[in-house]
Image (cartoon, rainbow, N blue to C red; front, side, top):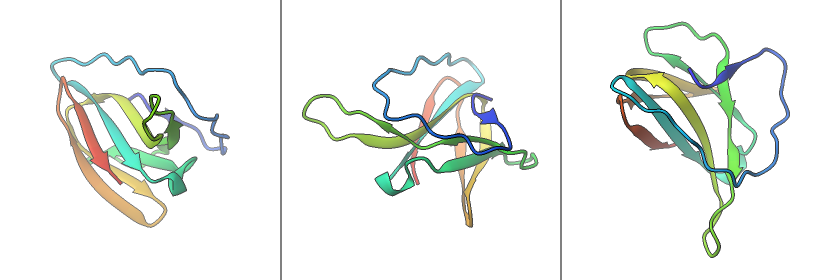
Length: 108
C-alpha cells in the first residue's frame, strides 16, 4: 500500500506543487480523498475492509492550485489492490471502493 506506517507523530511538510506519478494496473488502483482546509495535517488511517487497523495512514496536504485556481486539500493513497477500504479519523469512519486501473475520488 502506498501509505506509510509509524507510531510517532510526523510533522506534515508544507504545501506541494509537485505532480503525483501513479502506476495503475489491472488490479492496482489509487484513491484521492478531498477534505476541507480545516483537516490540513490530519492523518487518516486506511485498511482493507477485511483487514485489521495497523496504523497505515497518510496526512492531508495542501495542493497548490494552478494560477487562478484555489488550493485543494487532499490525501493520495496509491498502490492499492482493488477492493473495499475503510478510512478513519478519530471518531469518523467511511468506506471507499478502489477499482484496478483507476483513481477513486471521494470527498471527506
